[in-house]
Image 1 (cartoon, each protein chain N blue to C red):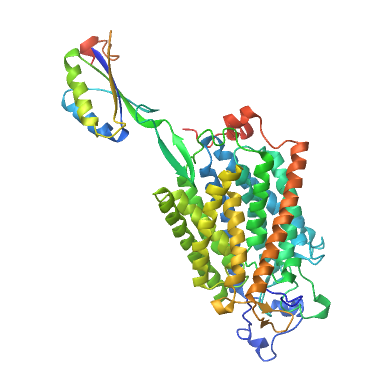
Image 2 (image 1 turned 135 degrees about the horizontal axis):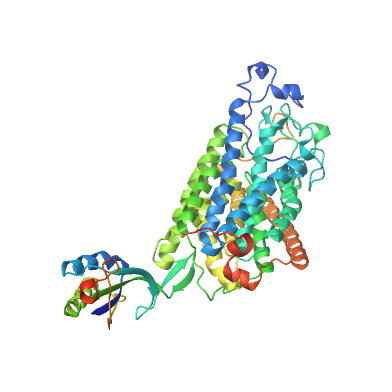
Length: 112
Length: 471
């Protein structure tokens, strides 16, 4: 199993969810986060006073999928979340040791 | 120069019709209370009470939301409670001594205590308007002016928002209201009334600036310059916020600020049009001027921003609106609608320079731009009134109340502008000195600032034990 962590632009969330559901991903965790990468913030002006907003709002997806689905899921997120503008986000993939479904006690791939 | 004791004031539409009982005899000089009772119009009274409620709405919630939205979340509630409490204190003080000190005879600088606790004021006592033989119930006048005394000290607090101790601030407001607001209100607005000024007994019974012939329809000097300069002094004595110019301090809710500014605009009709003390054509003119100057100032602020920053902003639009409202306040009943429009267009670029360039240059932390908008906008309006009141520009001119019935005075624009500048100078100096003394004394005695930790954590939790939002 793989844990895919993706930081994407908030307005892309719904598109990414639909695309992932379409390839068989059956669950995800979503968190509203702030952060910076290459985009490194922007400037806001209030009555002539400029403020550097260093942390920009993003959405973090956490998805655990079977090994077989991992590459396709990553490709789907990459393709769907892409706008060609700076600040589209990052995707990280980690190994997952173990998974349990709380209701039934099923484990690993069966728990997904 | 204007003749001494000219008793300049808003235009008086002489009421020779509408009072059939009096029409044949002509207006009555020096009327008795019984005669005044026949000179009261229910429409005027109703309008004054409605206007009073509108002006209270300007303070709560309008000003509180306007200011509250501009601070960080952790200080939102502190602004709301400060404004709310100042209104409470202002109203109590007004009934106790304020009305008497502002609106009874005394010296040219301040009234006496003969009407303390509203002694002698009753349902059968009356206050003069700007027209011969037109009166409103004195209670209505007391209430209307009370709302002004409530909102003016509340305007000041925006200058040192997010870093002031609550009770020392309240103490300042008490002292400032006594030593700056009442005297300046007396100097600018107190006079014996149109049916009395030509009576030898009452000749010269007026405030200093009224006697000079200064024109201030609804409070450019009394309210806005007065509060704006006090704010500037306050933010310098209190000092900058921790992290000023280092950490971002963006407004936490421009939605609140927009609601506040919009309610201010609506309430300001009571403030400006109500200041005519009657419901007539001049009242409608003041209403219209308030509307159009504000609209023009909104437009010009946003255009300046578009040129300067390449984008129109909501905060720019609402700040422009407030600048326009401030500027038209002294001019509301004097300018023509075209004049008010021009005044609105001019005030925003001037205030914009102060809130962006001048503030940055001198490095004072006038957090919510009380000086930049109210102080400067008030000065632009006060001086502009001297120009725009000129009848040759469609203005209303001034009335000579030393003649009975009152007659239009000869308008000398240069002399009037000089008088306006003198009135501004007196106000700036008076409130500047009073504010500096009060802030310095309170700072010495009790301290003005919360501890560094408390300021960082925010005043809502540390001073009030509450949070604006529990989500």
